Length: 183
Image (cartoon, rainbow, N blue to C red):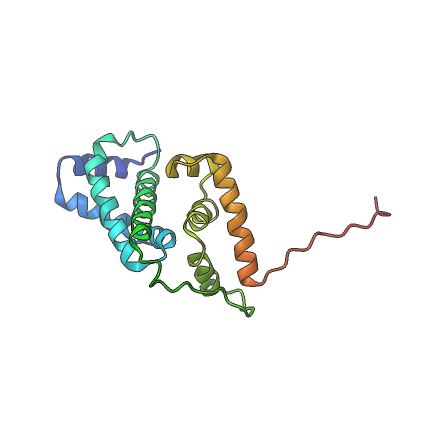
């Protein structure tokens, strides 16, 4: 549900109030840049996607139905732009000249920077679904809608992303042993 402050901000932006537009941008830019960076894995692409997304936000603000928070609506736009920007970038890569990073062969301590790096190294689909479900809290049907894929594809991508992360981070998942004689 939109707050009264967000309501005012949206209305002021719709009236082309430049100060309100700057306030909206300043309020959400850091969190949305982080999200864009997690999806693209590249600072320049993340910045480009963020700028394109905010252009889309301001152009489409009259379509904001105010049924969700303003931040949630902006987040959806940022995700779509980051994903679209990354797909466009991938199509322009000269694969013969590109150097593919090999997964780390040694086990590193599981710290935030190593986890972030491992997430960045995931293939596009895996990384996008992982970020949206595990870090941003989207449900599979929401991810499917945002990315234009089937819900089953989202679930499969997440499964493979987690499996790849476990392998890259050297995490072994062992089944829990139960004592058959205990009741």
